[in-house]
Amino acid sequence: MRKVLLAIMIILPLAFLNAGDYHDIALSIGHSTYKWPEKGISFSYGINIGLTERMELDVWGVSELVPRPFESNIVGAELSFAVMGPRSTASKIAGTGINTLVSVGGFYRTDNNGAGPIVSVTPLTVGSPITGRRERLLRTGVGYDAVNNEVVIMFSLLSLDYYVRGTYRDYTF
Image 1 (cartoon, rainbow, N blue to C red):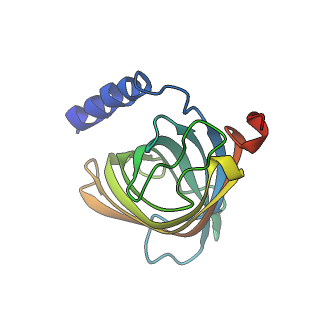
Image 2: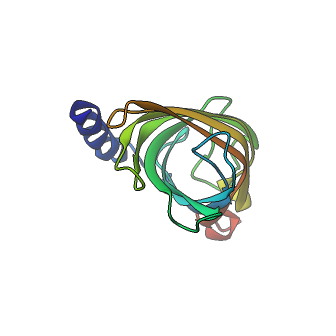
Image 3: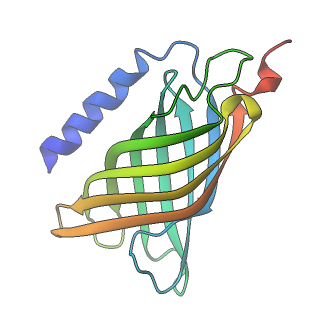
């Protein structure tokens, strides 16, 4: 468990060395769950930072709203790779408007001190940093909680990314 977290902590900072001008930043909010099937409502929130033409860093959290607000929480970080084309070109030219993301990272659960690796796929994203907004649909992730020896299945129906840096407003035409 410690070796996996150590590897993630080494790889994430090294990804910034290859970043270039792709540092777009988005705030994210949407639906998500990590206790699937869930008997309540949870929401996700986070920040996405562009690293390269096809890679981004996602730092996110998921909190339960119903029936016990904020009693169960999970936080995590993932490196995401755009499969179908560049997510950003670091210029006024937009990247691929429809894409698929594959992500690898780690998580920490506050309700039982669980932690471990996670792999997820977002089969459909619509939008790009240059447009200022992106929708991520049907994100599904599978993780292994090594502390509690259990599988974590995450699902997000819809998540919205609002870009605060790296949009059409940041480039002169």
